[in-house]
Length: 73
Image 1 (cartoon, rainbow, N blue to C red):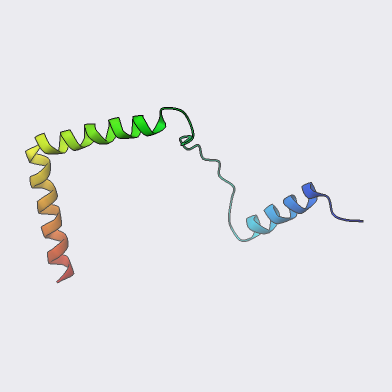
Image 2: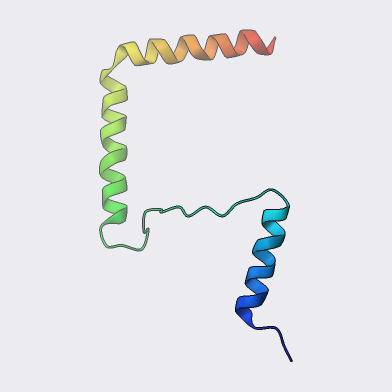
């Protein structure tokens, strides 16, 4: 007799746990939802505007980039 789907799934989960893994459930935005693309665009434009007007942020990012370049040498 064939192993039921539930038994196979449980066996697989037990094997993964034996390897030190654990199941995790995550929730992600539904990219198929109406208005998703428009909301992404709205948020992207807000971030771009903020970046343009926040000169201190640009100074900070430039300094961080310079530090990374020094560390790479």
